[in-house]
Amino acid sequence: MAEMNAVVITAPGEAEVLEPQRVTIREPGRGELRVRVRAAGVNRADLLQRRGLYPAPPGWPAEIPGLEYAGEVESVGDGVTLWQPGDRVMGLVGGGGYAEFVVVPEREAIAVPAGLSFEEAAAIPEVFITAHDALFTQLRLGLGERLLIHAVGSGVGSAALQLAKVAGATVLGTSRSAWKLERARELGLDVAIDSSREDVAEAVHRATGGQGVHAILDLVAGPCLAASLESLAVKGRMIVVGLTAGRRAEVDFGSVLGKRLQIVGTSLRTRPLEERIAAARAFDRDVGELLASGRVRPIIDRVFPFEQAVDAHRHMEANANFGKIVIMLPRP
Image (cartoon, rainbow, N blue to C red; front, side, top):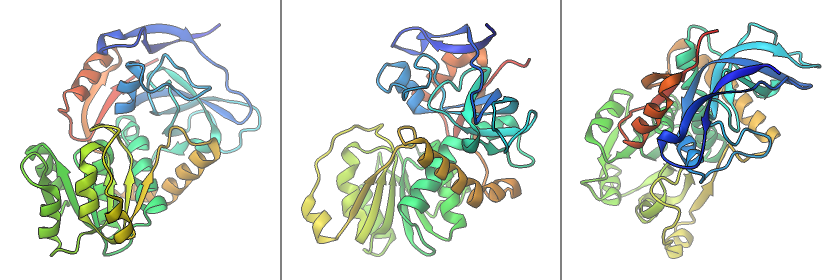
């Protein structure tokens, strides 16, 4: 059987457990594409999967991390009509992105916007599809509304900031790093809040004249929940996307009921195929041209070669990145 190069989790643990190995290549089935991966994005979910804390969904490689890819269609299965070999595509996978090939449903693949490199394309799917789905499908963010983004310097945070500004929102953002807030200002951030120095709720009320924000994109969770509830305006909406600050927090339900708040949780990775396809198609419809025209852009922090996947994980764990970390796969 044919084999390919892949970064494999040899055992749950620290970054050193990642190791390049040869693994079997799967043939595409009916309605599937096999894509030669040129670049793969690195996400915090990959770090959790490596530690044994976030297993891949059924049907995806448990031992190969990677949630997003960019590359070229190498072959197609029976019944495929949307793509042909040589097409440049990008998209999300349940795992296996750190490999020379991935096999994906044809309807979940997205065309790489014109003018973008594979490195840039690999920095798009997870953060931009997540941000678009959270802001517009889930929160229904509207023109003129005020949005607070926790961890605005993260990959999803920087993508959400750009999309919200294009949509006409006023954006407030938090970070524990002053330099990340400065970078976010360059992308249009209206109000920067250093959560290591400032009381977030007080800063929000000061910036909004005591009115609060209409919506919150929470990429950290944990103890910041109390400040978020206090920061929301009456009938405000909040969506929790990440849990980097912790899975648990106390909830003041008096505030939730009194202000008629909505709290939503979301995860793309665990959704059924049809829901993932719908999210991909909505993103392509609304954001594809914005990326092609440069009105929004992927923010790349660093690109690592395939052989340095361990260093890529260490870099993310050090919280030293603004925007995306990308791994380049070996050339054929």
